[in-house]
Image (cartoon, rainbow, N blue to C red; front, side, top):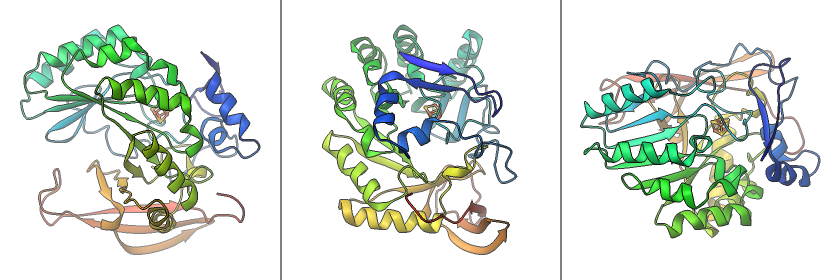
Length: 345
Ligand code: SF4
């Protein structure tokens, strides 16, 4: 199904290409945005003083290994460490998430913790890509969650339907039906990824009553242009998939070549909204662990320049009822990028 190789001279983040997706990426020619997402760049993945090993602040929010809690009512379980394609922009590439998933004892601790927390109503499987787990394992997770009365739903975050659509087979769909009601959140970033093979995978899920949404990341060289972003939104809608969030790129190690300034991102998003006739929820996942914050809620308070890098400090004041932040507390976050060179995004 996949071609794999190692790039030890860059770092330990693997390189892997599903065959059909690689063909699709190469068919887009020189400068292919799909190749940019999966192909290492020796010049762009070295040490970076502005990178953060844990750019969304989740490593300090694990009450038990592999379980992340940022919100009172839902948790993320890092169920798998492997992926079908190792996206070079991945926000978890600098941490432990790709270095091994939970074993039987870890799962025992996870289920035990969930049983002791009746306020948690939703469990989100992430990773790595949970679809690298066999269907029988996913079905077992669903059944076990189904025996915890207060877990009302589970969600699977996966890029598999996009990069290896045939992974969404009948047994996977059956596995989703083994637990509480399930939703699937896929991850397409470019309109070329929305092709008949993805449409078929989405159709198999929706026919089984599984809602499907998409999360995308705003990425230079991939989708940081209004026509491309609007086309992505329209094509996804055409196959029955809404855009749940558009993420500002996180400052994970080795990802600097994808960073877009927040100001530029806002401009692109506003123009794309006008072109697509849809609102886009553009968010930043703060390194403080407070979760996703709407970009429109950030206010610039300072600006500086270091070499080619530009930096703007933004302040976010907690709205009423936001979990994890004391009332009135403000959080500061630095946006870092390099000015775009002339030419395509
Ligand atoms: S599939 Fe998801 S977890 Fe895996 S490398 Fe890509 S973004 Fe990261």
